[in-house]
Image 1 (cartoon, one colour):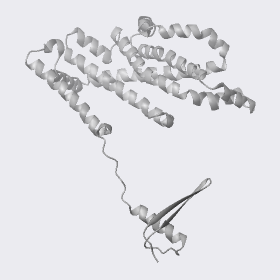
Image 2 (cartoon, one colour; image 1 turned 120 degrees about the vertical axis):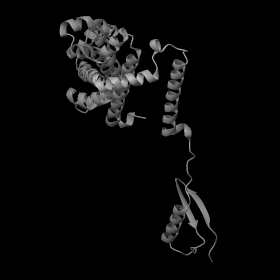
Image 3 (cartoon, rainbow, N blue to C red; image 1 turned 90 degrees about the horizontal axis):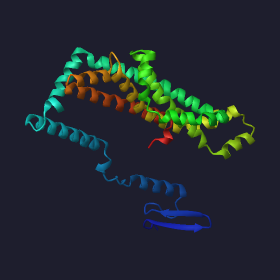
Image 4 (cartoon, rainbow, N blue to C red; image 1 turned 90 degrees about the vertical axis):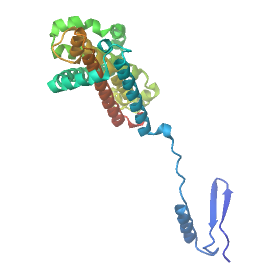
Length: 306
């Protein structure tokens, strides 16, 4: 006789067996039919949808950000129109928009942006990669690292912009001096970060590889470099800002083009709207470069990204 749907659970030692009987299948039916019927019933059962969490929604978060920016700009423009603030000293969203259109039409904004981004990226890549390389290399020469360590600490604490006058005198006011400034600002950070990362490697892993007959070169390639990559990528995130700061500082001192020069000249002419255009373009450049580094990190270290 068929019976109603029942489930029986039996625990024997370390194993647990589940017996399921359906009303549509007799008790004498084969186990294969019973399993197939149970799987079909489970598949047909409606799945519970996760409740919508608006706090974790990507689109709602972006809409809130846009609404905040729009509210700030609207309040700024209203205050300028009503005379609550002086547009000559503070600028206004309408004036910034008109100035941005003028700079785009003349091509000055794109030329200055390209000059700044070009020098920043070259200095960032050369300084960060070479600094990471020499920082890893110090693991192979611990005695040399102990001798040079105080010099590295002193250079790291030195404000890099203080070297700008000398670097500009040595390399001129062109792009080469700005690349050199970005290199100086990023090299020491990557070097110290990579060298510090080598100190965080578990010594038992190094001893294990040595006991298995691995050479120092093999340990360096298979253990030291992979274990230090998160430290190196973290220094790259910091170096984006450092390279851009050094680049803009050099353009403030002496330059024939660049966003820093545009901001400096516009400030001397009391053209605050053009200054705001340069600042906003710098913010866009910084966010873009940071996003590129984050994407590279996700590709190289997928397990390290949230």
